[in-house]
Image 1 (tube, helix red, strand yellow):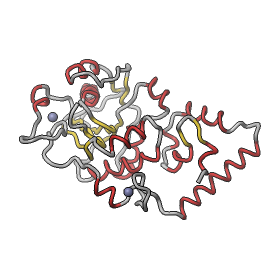
Image 2: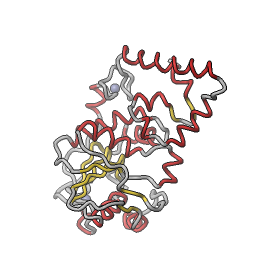
Image 3: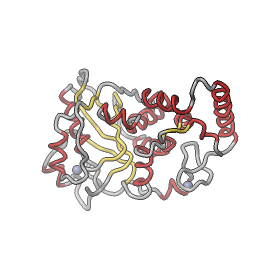
Image 4: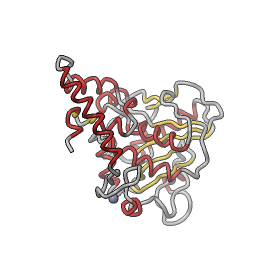
Length: 281
Ligand SMILES: [Zn+2]
Ligand SMILES: [Zn+2]
């Protein structure tokens, strides 16, 4: 409808952040840049006009039913229609009890048997196949934050019956990467899942203390080596059961390294909750 265009810039749309209820989790630096580009204060009439358009858009959205992010038909309040929700590639069937990779038989994959991960258990909502392999990149690289709510709803449904942790954490980005991207996709997901399930979220305790190179061409062992000591915990977590939320789990090396840092800080149990699990490297 063009209502969002007035505040558009750099791939991030303030209207989408507001609608997703996530405006405060987006890096102030990026939002400030976005405002400077699109809302010069010298242009006061344009500021008022934009504000009115924002109000009009929110009223408009309340009157019209939500659209499915996949097919555009009428959706539930999380942004998915019943048909698309039904057709998503759920991560069901036999899975490794530790890393949630698909298994033909048994309850633990060869990789976890060979190298026990730092985490205790992992739950995945979906397989990283179509359309998750399009939705998640559009969310985290394309900055389409309207996808946070449908993705978080899939994860919240998957973990609703899981043992409740004491604390929910998000897998952090290195501060430099977060400044480039403007937001941490895992934190947005964790906040929505935590709100829906009534779980406390701590966004500060887990820190990525050094950047890690892209892992696409590395083996599992190389990824684990590259991630060693990549994370640290800022306070003690003695005796706590914590869950780390992430968008995609590929090799599990990031979650493994984060879990080791959390265990070193005293955590009793560390689980991973991920929206999508890639079953092959
Ligand atoms: Zn649909
Ligand atoms: Zn495994």
